[in-house]
Image (cartoon, rainbow, N blue to C red; front, side, top):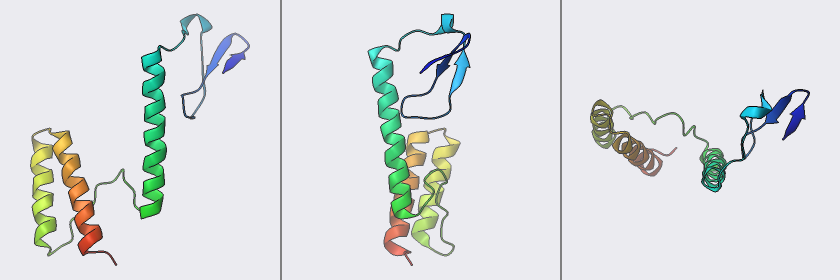
Length: 107
């Protein structure tokens, strides 16, 4: 962004908190780093838009509805994935549980 006295002032692509550092430690980002940061910023904005539209907190996993067999099954799958450190399968179970709840438990 610029300089503040003897410090370089930096801010992440897509916005965020600024920080100051020694200008001798700063280098131009590579094309791959700029593209990656831009994709991350776009994904963050998209998640916020979806979360606001659905009125849910996508950073918190959905909770199983007590007494629902499908919720219980998906909750068991998620727990097994978590125990196996399979974060992709855990995320898949969260997505399926959220879809199920939106379809079958929507108010």
